[in-house]
Amino acid sequence: MSDPRTRIPDATIVELSSQRDEIRALVEKIVDLADEAGYSKSSTYAIRLALVEGIANAFEHGHKSLGHDAPIRVEYSISERVVEVAIEDQGTGFVPAELPDPTLEENISNPRGRGVMLMRAYMTDVTFNQAGNRVKLRYEPKN
Amino acid sequence: MSDSRLRITESNSVTQVEFVDRNILDEVNIQAISEEITGLIGLAEIPRILINFTNVDHLSSAALGALITINKKIKDKSGELRLANIDPQIYEIFVITQLNSLFNIHETADEALEKFAG
Image 1: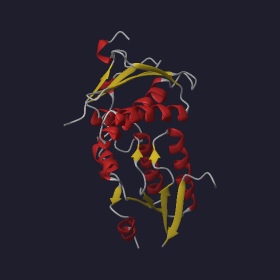
Image 2: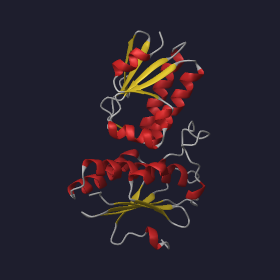
Image 3: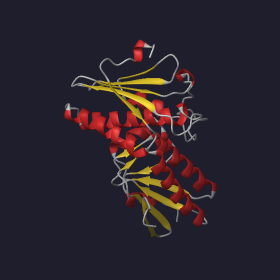
Image 4: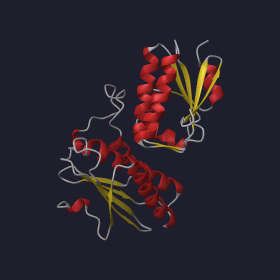
């Protein structure tokens, strides 16, 4: 947690296993909290999608060589003004700038590689730490 | 097949597939759906498949990936895949990823059924 850009002050911290029911429950909990905080349906749609993509990336790519038992860490903070979620895996990280553009003709038929693009499309900010094993999703509703 | 994630109907040699789940988000669910549709492709000499997204609220990038793989398998057998009834919020995901240019997407299932080759 050396990278201040991805830090979330006063966050709720959860260790999350790769069990689908556990993942689903956490995603729905964060979405429900945003709903209760007054976020619109299109906002909670965006938050759910970005969460699903971020968590899937952490397990599939971050923990590729670590096995299914290694948990990831999810931190979240929800206010009426902003939703912030950080997802951190125990992997060695990746370089986001090196991700191929999935919309290019040579990549359009590749079944993978669209998660980060969708997170960026739906969130106000998507910030990776230096190591590339932690991402902070930040969503501010558009008024 | 009590644990099937799909509702499958057949009309005019087109196999129409609908999803049981409103959310097609997690890898396990998506893999089960892919395997079922791959089974349908395997059974047909020239697969003509309409995937009807009625009732589907959420789709992840992993689901998009599964659709790309399904499309390829159908094309490999000179078949046709058409998608219909995609909720506007989900369609936006196709637009962002530019996959709306890769798939044949129709507003309604009837419109899609009319477009299948003879």
